[in-house]
Image 1: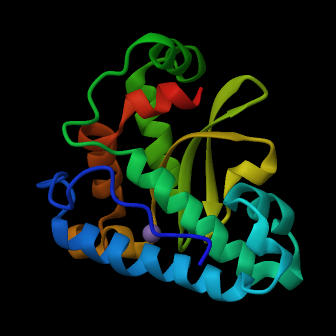
Image 2: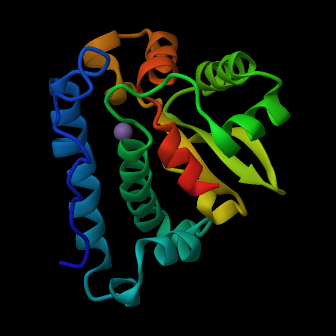
Length: 196
Ligand code: MN3
């Protein structure tokens, strides 16, 4: 099979108490794995089998007849990007170029966090909130369901999964609390810096 479930970049309990091992075991071991398995089944025997994940996402974005392939490929990519967008003892104050660009585009770190959380709460139903580079500027975008900014001329920098499965075991309906915790305690600013 061409695609494999990537290992988490840290042990499943490493983000506690902010995100439980139980959440990560289900989210990574069941949800993320299901997207990988479904994608492999869907592309078996098609030309997509020989492409990279990024190539499949770009080739099938907006293509109604390949929507299932797009959704599963994008969800595989999005989740791997999400695991890397977090780290134990994350959050805090970013430095260097990330700090400079956040201040330039959002005024302050607090201003950025407020806008990121607003976007997360404004996403109706399942989706993602992203920090992206677009036209050489940092922007916050929200996407529905599986949609990945890669195919929209945007360069993802950091993401937070706002599907209910990402937070329901730990936060129930309190999406805002999960996103605040993501920003304050989990966000991996070193990963963000690498993506600029
Ligand atoms: Mn998810």
